Amino acid sequence: MKAEMIKVDPANPQREIMEKAGRILRGGGLVAFPTETVYGLGGDGLRPESSSRIYRAKGRPSDNPLIVHIARLEDLFKVAAQTPDGALRLAREFWPGPLTMIFPKNRAVPYETTGGLESVAVRMPNHPVALSLIQAAGGFVAAPSANRSGRPSPTLAAHVAEDLGDEIEMILDGGMVGIGLESTIVDFTESPPVILRPGFISREMLASRIGQVELDPGLDRPGSGPPKAPGMRYRHYAPQAPLTIVEGEAGSVAAYLNRLAQEESQAGGQAGILACDETAGLYRYGVVKSVGSRRSEEDIARRLYQALREFDRERVSCIYSESFHTPRMGQAIMNRLLKAAGYQSVLVSDYKD
Ligand code: AMP
Ligand code: MG
Image 1 (tube, rainbow, N blue to C red):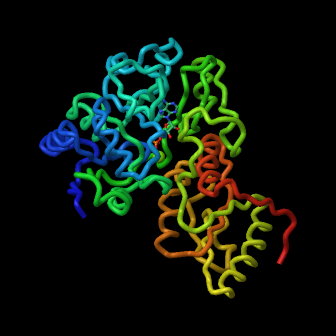
Image 2: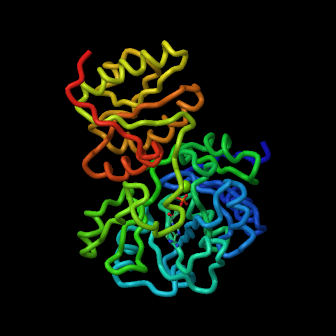
């Protein structure tokens, strides 16, 4: 592995480490770092060559824009040409935090960073390591999630090493992330603003602060109208084995999957089953993983990507997942699961052994 892996104190990052990481970014190199959502792959957001290197390292299509991370509110005005009042209200309320907002870009931001678009996505992450790195790098860090393009986002430094260890200069290991799903993205180049990606901050939380907020109509359905950002059309977050979501009452889902998983093993394969604490004991065949209790949607969100990666390591031949329509983050969890499944889902009702 080429990347230097350095453990950093997530609450009080050591100054020498952050200065070293900042020098790498100012010199045009790439550093992966923890945020409160997932690990990011950082480069200097105002340098075209740095952004181009990010695309190459991830194997990411160059029309899928990056998010520019800042550490101070006043820096927003150096990259965004117009900032509506509603957006500023949200920034004051939720930054630093898991909210990305899109604005018309100004000239400082190269097209390499925005995937050729006239708009720029901006976020202030809520993590001491991320904030300290952004400052050490000069204020503007372009960072997509630190996974190879298409794979589940990294929630541990080891996931970054697995995907990008040979491509980048440094990985800052700050332990497991807090939220585990990428930020909510709201497009403020539209009025009313539009949610392009659901996340920890729900539509209701946004609407209670600024009134009407739309949901992008293409969100949970493939091929319904042109995507707002080119990146929205790519398959994402996906494990290697084909994934299918199984909807329905717990007993029926378990009976149905017991039959499919048994058939899979008779055919020489092995099914992976993504379940929860309440149902894991109902499954009799295959590799069964729980993402936690249905009573804690935070746990489900935090463990989802890690569980998908573990199925890859265990070389299962197919994966079935229960659905997780939890009250607040359900929209974000199901958005990622559906994309990982390439929108394959089945509804099972009244199925018995
Ligand atoms: P990632 O950094 O991998 O979480 O992905 C960033 C995502 O942000 C992209 O895939 C787009 O969906 C979205 N995004 C970033 N910049 C823009 C933009 N200017 N307009 C619309 N969407 C954007
Ligand atoms: Mg990503």
